[in-house]
Length: 239
Image 1 (tube, rainbow, N blue to C red):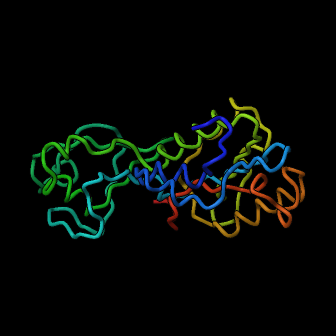
Image 2 (image 1 turned 60 degrees about the vertical axis):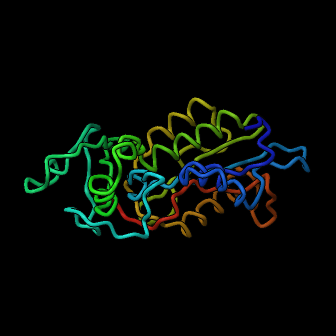
């Protein structure tokens, strides 16, 4: 990524990371930083801290539109509290003792969440090579990596971070202009334990820009002064 970040916005970056597809970059709707203005870009990152961000990233070979047969309840969710190799028996004493797959927990003490349909694919349909190569990280871990990349490469821009506040809009985690080390520390500490009050959080972001001078009134905003969203796009309460 170029240090000027003239081509890609945060939505494009995070979508590309979560989807693990280079084609996601083509969906970027607004450049994060444009060179039409000499002013410093004021960027408020809205980081999705909802419970669904603890879901494990699924393998590319898994098709969520297919119902896979197996011992797991395909509509259920199975939690993993510690990284390690697990067999189906680890989830139920009546399940088979093989094969084994490496599964992960999430960040900040939260368990990694796996859908039953995905586990049916992992254990009863994936090849040995596919099972050995399943992603070993969750959505929130991938989002943090993507946001950190943006922060490190965003020289010439001022960043701030906001997260969801339960059901009640957004909470400012770091004001715009916070130093890089503090921003990275605050992002690292985000927990996926909220609902997804996206509309209310956008209002909180608007109020921040209007009332604190973070970037000016968004009614006259340009691409260099507006909130950007780091989210998996799903409305999910804490598990």
